[in-house]
Length: 279
View 1: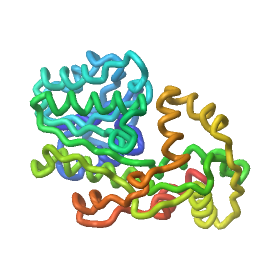
View 2 (view 1 turned 90 degrees about the vertical axis):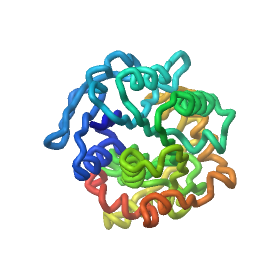
View 3 (view 1 turned 180 degrees about the vertical axis):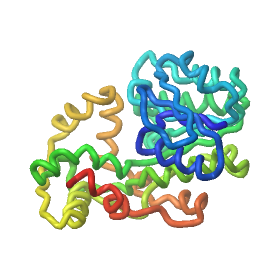
View 4 (view 1 turned 90 degrees about the horizontal axis):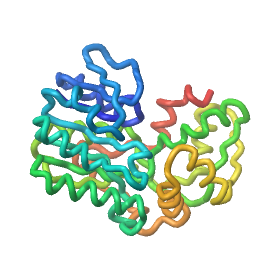
């Protein structure tokens, strides 16, 4: 049995589906009650209270670990989840980390994530680490304004990064959970092309067949919006990257293709599959 945390999110949902399709028994973990695919067990648990995961981990062989924003906050102890998993008999953990661990190692949230990666390496478990860059699904933050105003508001409109489709992250995660060849792997996950926020808005407009206006936010305006959902340190670390990506953050990684045998999906593909959210 494989436990998927964050199972109702943009990575966890397609990962749960992929593992179920592969014939695996899956326990889906989310903070609140949620609908899951037929045959999948659901456990409601808050990762900030690791003991609540104990029922989900009973009988599990592997764990996909995805941390919500509050587990990057000062005082959080996500490494306790690794210890609990090991005590429960889990033998493999695939951790969703961040590209910034390598490209911005001194950012406060990156220091914490590096410490978690190190705790996993030192645990004695089989492990793999996924380090994605920006997510294509971050564009869902614009869904309401596109639906109601045909407008997108974002900072740094003409600064791009190679955003990754969460479905590709999920497929790579499934491979790492199921195939021993990926044990000890650290995979940087990006999309196939650098794309700016303005170009993303244009892609949404093209899929809708309707113009979408782009409004550029200041950094302060963007941070105020982000800190409604994530700690200020994580917001600052993210804004540092999207304001001025360094060469490593602009690099198109070969790792999706190395694992999956195909190129990563472009942003337009993600838009086509998710256009209903913007209508």
